[in-house]
Image (cartoon, rainbow, N blue to C red; front, side, top):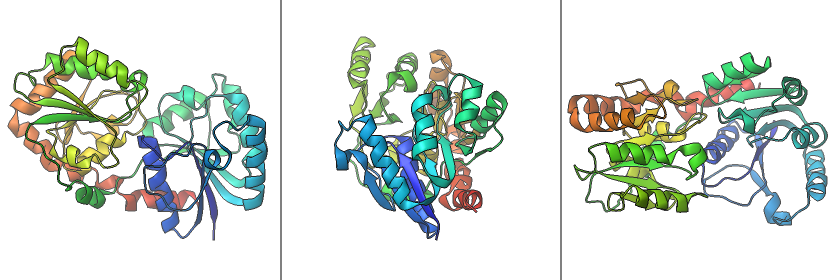
Length: 355
């Protein structure tokens, strides 16, 4: 039996964390001995495997020296066949120490979950090759794979998309919620520097949705909630934009939304898009790097528009309300369009990689 360690910051709140939890279940389905090493003790999503939380065992104030000593003993004790690293890795020196002195396994796999490469690679190409010389890189989009290959010249690079449990979403989205108004939906981590909620609010303000009494719901939490509320007030949208806290099951809202929206500066392979489509809800997304153009077929399952342009995004909002034929076509195609990202299909790719 193969023994694997999945490394993550946490299993709470974000799309990357949800993807890590799903990956642990995929690997367990292979009858592998799965261990999850987590630095923060934050769990919102179901997972499979044996969990080791560094924060739970040693507290949040553990020194870097003790952390390295604990981790070295952990990896020495378990003799893993594979390490799959899902963390961001912004600092070269720290990661070089971890990859060469701490993370012991027969093979190492580093997952790149965002096109914001500063979170994963040093600026210097030589340092990139030094850090990842004995590591397989897995991007969560084809565009991430291609960019890594061209930019850094790394050879052991591939891509495996995030998976979506289509049938599971159908069940979870049927939970009853009381709603008497029409709305569009944005959900995710509230972090302005990544998610560009300013663009979302500007486009909604420019559109005709508020005049039609179609509200904007925003579900999630993060470090910029106060900034979001300030912007809602500044745009004079208090009666039209409603913020709801993070939910482990936002999918009843996803299912009942007219459509969901993505406005990010950058992504990897955004779960909100594949989850929305799996619930049968079409999407409107900016064409950021990376992921949306590999998920959305324009005017087939959603609308894909240029980034950083609130006027164009507002027109897309209005077109989904005014052009019922277009909207119904995209809604009809939504679920089938993400079948290729099913857990069964993505499992086969991980199985092949781990042979």
